[in-house]
Each structure stands twice: as structure tokens, then as C-alpha cells.
Image (cartoon, rainbow, N blue to C red; front, side, top):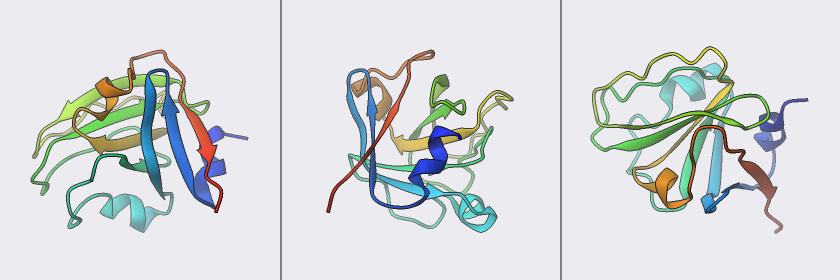
Length: 125
């Protein structure tokens, strides 16, 4: 079973080698939720992130703020990390199974680099 399918239910956070990438993780796993993504939503606050699953490419068309895009494989091993300004398209990562969209600077603050592994942690309460 893929690691990201665990996050479909319950409250989860996402931990990286250098700390917490997302204290509050929202999952977009249906076609409609993935299509909407962060469009028409307020700016992500520090500690928030959106996990798009399945996903191998993202865009920031129509967005007004910069995001970090962290592409991961089925075991949440990081395939690529990009900071995307508005009106950009990422390249396609065929090995990626999900993408985490977080506020700009979140990936570097949590020491997220290509090859590292992220961990889903279920929040109690």
C-alpha cells in the first residue's frame, strides 16, 4: 500500500529530516479536488500544505503567490523540490506519485532535498 493513501482519512502532519514540513496537511485525492488545488484559496499559512495524489506535474496559473512544490514517489521519497512563482508550470516527474504544495521557503526550512524521505504522522484528537 502506498504511504500517501494513509492520509486520506484523519488528521496528519508531514515530517522531514530537518523538522515539520506541514503541521496541517490537507489531501486532494479526487479529480475535482486535485483540479482545484490551491486555486481561489487564501495564501497558505506557515505549517499548512496540500498533498495532491496522484500527481506528477503542477502549475501556478491563476495563483498570486509563490509555493514550494515537493514531488514524491509512492514511499514519500523526494523526487524533486521546486519553488514556483505564479503563472508557471513544473516539469513532469514520471516517478512522482504525489506533490506537496507548501508556502515558499517551507521545504528549505525543513531540510527537504531530493532523495530524503518524508514521514506522515497521524495527529491525535
